[in-house]
Amino acid sequence: MKKHTLKLTGVISTMMVSTSVVAEVDFHGYMRAGIGISGDNGQQVRYESNKVGRLGNEDDLYAEVQLGKEVYNQNGKSFYVDSMAAWLSDGSNDFEGTNTSCELEPDADGGISCDNDAQFAIRQFNVQTEGLIARDPGAVIWAGKRYYQRHDIHITDFYYWDTSGSGAGVENISAGAGKLSLAALRQDDGDVNVNNLDIRYAEIGLWDGANLELGFNYGFINETDSQKDEGLGVGEDPLMVTAELTMDDVVGGLNKVILQYATESFGEQMAGLGAGNSPDANSDDGVDGYRIINWGVMAPSDTWEIGYQLVYARSTFDSQDDHDIFSIVARPMYKWNEYNRTVFEAGWFTEEKDNVDSSASKFTIAQAWSAGSSFWARPELRVYASYIEDYEDNSIGEADDSEYNLGVQVEAWW
Image (cartoon, rainbow, N blue to C red; front, side, top):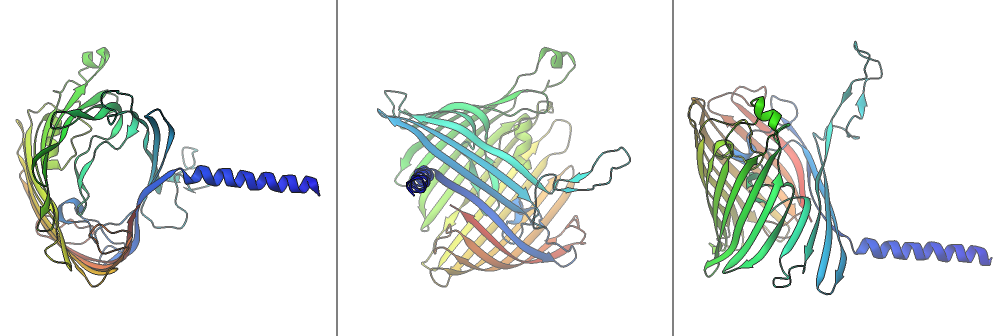
């Protein structure tokens, strides 16, 4: 009897220790998933969501799971280990995974064919430290793979400043009126080694409720001697400069004004709605580009909140036609009570690329239930209907010039 008692005591102790360890782990994440149909394309379509809006215009299952833990904290010095894995699929089946759907019979070449119906990615794995710089204990020294100070517009999922990747740096260094951050991130172009040098000076107070952030990115192409001899990676190093003004109290909400100028492959990304990352080592076309962005969330009353985006961008080339784009999206939301809301989203864009005109619009109405009344409250469960019209290219899936989506979606972050 005593022997069984000791075994039970050991199991309980192990469970208590395990629970204690789990309780100290930070658990964060993001997910979206749902089901939808379209009029002519079977499964619902996704069409230019970063130009006309993402509400009722997403056809995937995407999830991120982030686990982090402070592994050391003594004498004012902290070491934190962070990690994140992500999954992406079309959500069409019960059991989705990489290489899970395989034909058992060998093909003509004797191999077994598999359908990769889901993608898995390691998005973050890094160590962040504080307190190692005696004169500035709040500064963070980090190394590894991470999301690095990303800037995006939520209603269109448009990342206009995102240099995430493997790298190292020091951030939040006290420097005069603001905070200085320095980083180098690896963003290879195929076999050519490219590094993105990232310098940011943030939290520059201008007036009450307003601050400025300035940034400089330089794509350093680091080709090998043999690649130079073969003419690979011979493009000009691209650069990008960014200025972002944030105002915290504009019509009861938030407003951001962003100005960006870039050259070479970063310049091409201006009208291409890129994020200032993944430089093209072979880009050598004398590209210049800029964009002006205004986005935010207004709260004109207790029952209404409105998210919005205005983007104008232009890229000019030495040897081809210019690329221009203008996009406007608005997402008004009426709150019936703390948990029940009706959400609208309307978006329109016009674009000229390679001397070809494109233009389209989308309108969505959704009934939603959320964990709170804020525009940012999540989880949010939505039942929606969307109408999309293409005015030029007639390229909405298999449809000619218009399409509708009907569906249910949930989105959450925590």
